[in-house]
Amino acid sequence: MSYKPPRYLYFYLLFSIFFITLFIFASVETIERNLGQFNISKSSNTKIDLNIKNVSSLEIQINEIYITNSQSLCKTEQIYIFGTLRNRINNDIVRIRVEDIEVSNGLKMISKSTTIEPTRNYVQSPVVIVSKNFDCIDEVLTIEFEEKVNVKYLLIKKTDKYKSYNKIKTINIKAY
Image (tube, rainbow, N blue to C red; front, side, top):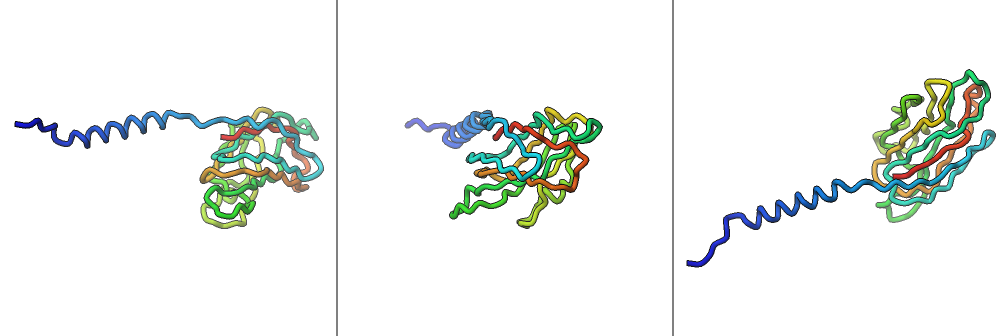
């Protein structure tokens, strides 16, 4: 009589290797890259060059504000994100579509439904955030993308629509 291995031995072996590999790679955390502090102009548009690849989300923290009135809420200008998609053949710089936006407790979105466009509509509203209280320092805005993208720059457009609000002066950006 010759030795016969137990039935389905290779199936159980392959199945256990698969789950061990899945467990190891699921516990790997995403890499946080601190891109530094950036100043935002009070009177004109600001272009913040980032040139970072494989980004799934950006975290923007408010560090300093221009105080126009002490009893005024804070408001960001219109924030646009430009870059390239990783799965595209040509590297045309396009406006990156946002999948989700999360804000800390002291902030709120102006119009989240138009900023997060579920279809491939290329006419989207910019990201605009307003504070709920008079102090918006150390508040955090997290912008998540549909896929990993290459972010070329952020464009913060100046508008005169909200003159009575305190504008943001310095931000800290982290990429994940």
